[in-house]
Length: 204
Image (cartoon, rainbow, N blue to C red; front, side):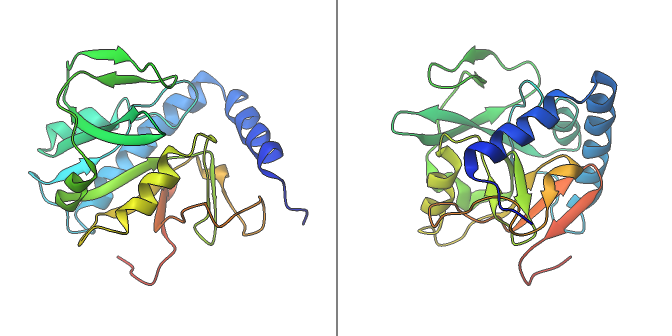
């Protein structure tokens, strides 16, 4: 197997996402919502706890059904805000929250109080976007570096949430599929419309 360099890999996975039909994306969103919601109790998550996720855009695995389902089930939801220096802060999401286009990225963000890294000590589960992940937990992101910096910074916290990347099933690939550097923060797990995968020694 030939390992793809990062530019080639990003173009490859972006192309695969663009080639998906609207029907395939809708079905994936429904399955992803079902898989995540069914997996919360086995992870020990209870209503009232905090889940940090993301507002999907374009061909990303959609959270349009998942976030309302989490809220309806009683979970509190945080989503990221892009800050200067490729840093992330976090803010509350709820159904009907006012959104504004980010000045730094091609995403919309809720208008509200911005919470720092330390809020992650109160978060039970962190769901992270990406383009692909290999079976060693290595994540291929969009290239901005926001999440790699954020995940590295979380190692300084006294406690942190369980972390899983969110992908389409075909984006969970064998180790060695794409280039990995020491700046790439590995993931603890992944979730796709086909189920959960954990790369560390803790299983559920």
